[in-house]
Amino acid sequence: MSADQGLPEATIRNVLDQETLKWVFVGGKGGVGKTTCSSILSILLSKVRSSVLIISTDPAHNLSDAFQQRFTKSPTLVNGFTNLYAMEVDPNVEQEDLGDGEGMDSMISELANAIPGIDEAMSFAEMLKLVQTMDYSVIVFDTAPTGHTLRLLQFPSTLEKGLAKLMSLKNRFGGLISQMTRMFGMDDDFAEDAILGKLEGMKDVIEQVNRQFKDPDLTTFVCVCIPEFLSLYETERLVQELTKFEIDTHNIIINQVLYDEEDTESKLLKARMKMQQKYLDQFYMLYDDFHITKLPLLPEEICGVRALEEFSANFSTPYKPPSTLDSVEGLEKRIEYLTQQLKEAEGELDKLRKGKQIA
Ligand SMILES: Nc1ncnc2c1ncn2[C@@H]1O[C@H](COP(=O)(O)OP(=O)(O)OP(=O)(O)O)[C@@H](O)[C@H]1O
Ligand SMILES: [Mg+2]
Image (cartoon, rainbow, N blue to C red):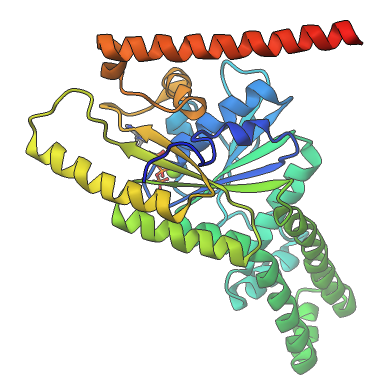
């Protein structure tokens, strides 16, 4: 099977066209090109939206490498843009924002340690709360490798479980908590209420965001992968998990595809191309209702805004190896295609003119 007629358009243009989207997640296995793809997507979105924020939630941040600019945990304007901002947050640390005073801080930290994942959930909630008030037209997430991403999306239930556990702890060890809070020199009712209030507040934000994440008009998840067995397997796992969490996904980017640009003599390249073809066929078979965008493997890395912009052409027009265009046959085909497009455009224009005359 190939990416021909009858399949959804083989580009990411649908994401750019969907004006209602507020959250765009980009995820996949380590090293497949998530940061590159999310950076390019944010650049392309900045051309059609009023303001765009790209957030990296990967502790090993690399937006800074991709854009060749240092970013922090506050949104920073990307050089050369007027409406594209980037920030790098670390879901693992940043507990400093969670408490109000010294005692509360350590109290919350204690609780955070007691409930696995809750510290991460809380800082994610804080970040979302902050981002929501900032009023960006669309927010792109460059997520950490798969397992981590799915954990982020599970946070609402993590928080809910955390709260339930806390309530039961409170009932069982009420006296102990009172003693502890008194040790911190706080009125125990006040301390308990403050902690629970804080958690409840987080829960509200996260529930609200969770509702938005489950709305396909507002949220979509773009899966990035490479044409290899492990990546195919991981993508299927990711798609299944997303379906379980009711998060829309209908785009797969297959990165690092080898094209037979000139007849290569290399046995290694030939073997790898054959292998890639096998998995490409499987991707098309498994995901015939997805937009599948193929991106070529370049000889060099894709660093800096210029390189990203250049590579972005492959996001809205399916990549064609240059040799096909350079050959006479290729050029003839291209001219034929363009003539056809011109005819169609003239036809559309004619229809419009006629419509105007009737009106
Ligand atoms: N199609 C490509 N051709 C050549 N180099 C590429 C291509 N796609 C990505 N790269 C390069 O590969 C490296 C890894 O890409 P990237 O950082 O986007 O992957 P990632 O999935 O975000 O990795 P990680 O899981 O470590 O965050 C980068 O140096 C990038 O410039
Ligand atoms: Mg990355």
